[in-house]
Image (tube, rainbow, N blue to C red; front, top):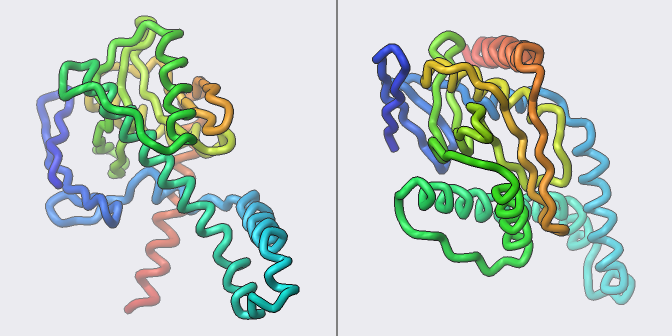
Length: 252
């Protein structure tokens, strides 16, 4: 799908986004996304989490194995796939919550209808956290699922929301993860840097807003150190660029 990106100086570009592949292009040329760039950062916590998911699966299925209703191959496959299923389930819930929040913001902006609650109890719990956060702030929504492009550094992305919150110009990224991780601040800084060029306004705050799927509580973190956080993102971008160049060299 094509999106027109307008900049504060009157310039505009057409950004093509393939949602299935999560790929951005401009005039046919690939443009790396913020999340793709940040995926170069090692996430050491994922390994013990994946091991725990495998151990939990075996604990749940141990009796079936001892009673020979599960083969060794079944157990190996189950343990290896446990973290993938857990990750996919969490991703599915996150997508439902993000879509509901997008539709709710669009409705508040006068576009479409008020969204209906989903069936999934964890998604409902996270949405309740979003509604609780909204009730604590004076918010003027400016955009939902805003596609963006940074002309200087040549990356693209989608920020969940742009708004004036208590009078401050802000970008907001919604999360349904188990915690607020450090790379989220780099992600928000990258979004803020691009939004500033598009809107012609300095971003006052870049919010990481996490909705807990179990408790219905929200966690709002203001990414205050913009310059430092963007420097971290820029470092990841340099690493991504170098690794991409080395990978392309091997293909020759």
